[in-house]
Length: 476
Image (tube, rainbow, N blue to C red):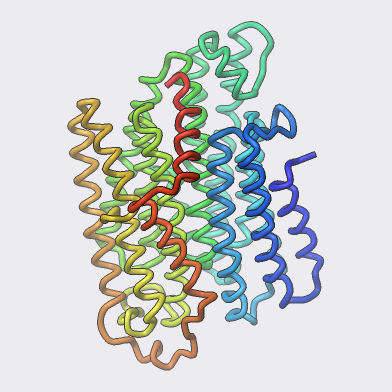
C-alpha cells in the first residue's frame, strides 16, 4: 500500500473530479493540502518510514516532502481566491490535476528505486500539462504542447539513463538491483563506462525537467502562459523533484569513483545556464517570462552547487528550499498583478506599487529575495556556494558566478521596477480586482519564510537540511 502522503492526494483527486459543486472543489483542495501537511509532519517524526524497500522516506526525501507540502498548502489556499475570480473557467480538471501533481511529487520523495523515481517524475508531467492549458488560448495550447514534447523527450532519455545504470550494476556481477541503497553499497563494482553514459543521459533527461540550458526552451512559454499558481508549483515543486533525482545520481557516480567526471559536467552546465539566463533577462519585458528565465538561472546555480562536491551540499539544499519558496511567492504575486492590469509586459503594467498596495510590495520583496539580496535566505546560500568555490581554489568559477549574479540582478531589477513604479494604466485604475487576504497572504507568507531562512534557520529546518546533506554526501 502506498504511503498516506502519496495516497491521500491521489484519492482526493478522484473525489474532487467527481464532486459536482464548483464551489466545493477549491475548498476540498485546500482541506487536502492541510491534511497532507499533517501527514507529512507525522511522517517526518518517524525516521526511515518504509512502506516497501522501493518506497522509504530517507533524509533527502523528508526534506523534499516537507518543502512540497508547505508549498502546495500556500498554492491551495491561493487557488481558492484565484478560482473565485475565474468563474468563467471550469475547475474540475484544474483541482484534480493539482492534487494528482501533489501525489506524484510525494511519490518522488519516497522513491528509492530508479523505476519508481522515473514514474513519479513522469507523472508530474502528465498531471501538470492540463494546468498549463487552463486559460485555453492559442498561446497556452502551444506552450502545453512544447512542454509535453520536450519533457517527454527528456524523460525518455532519463529512462534510458536509468537502464544504463542498471546495466552497469549487472556487469558488476552479483545480483542486479535498481534500489539506490543497493547501488551505493556496490558502487565500486559498477561498470564505469556504462555508468558515465548513464549519468550523461540522466543529466540531460532530468536537466530538461529542471530547465537547464539548452533543454530550457519549454520554460518561458509554459511559465508565461500558465496561471501564476501553476508557475509556482512548476518552479518550486517539479524542479525540486528533478534536482533531488539528479543529486542522487551524482552521489552514486561519485561513490563509484567517477565524481570528477560528474562534477565537471555539472559545473559546465550550471555556469552555461546562469550565463544564458543572464543574457536573456537583460532585455526581458514580460514579467512571467522574466521569472521563467530567473528559474533557469536558479537551476544553473543548483547544478553548479552539485558540481562543487560534498562541501557545497548543505548550501545546495538551502538554496533549493529558499528558491522554491521565493520563486513561488513571486509567481503568486505576479498572478495578482496580471489580473489587476490585464497584461504581463511592462507596456501594460505600470504603477503596480500604487495600484496594488499589498501585492506590489510583496513582489518587490520577492525580487530582492530571489536575486540573493541580504538578509534573505538566498543571500546566505549563495555566499556559502561562493565560499565553497574559493575554498576549492576554483577562482574562475567564483568570478563567473558573481558576474552572472550581477547581470541577473540588473536584468530583473530593470524589468520589475518598470512595472512597479509610475502611474497605473487606465485599464488598471478601472479594473474591479482588489487585493484580498486570500490572494496576497500566501505569497507574503512564502517571501517571509525566505527572509526567515536568511535571519535564522529554525532548528527543525536546519536538522532536515543537515541530515539530508549528510545522507547525500556519502561517497562524494
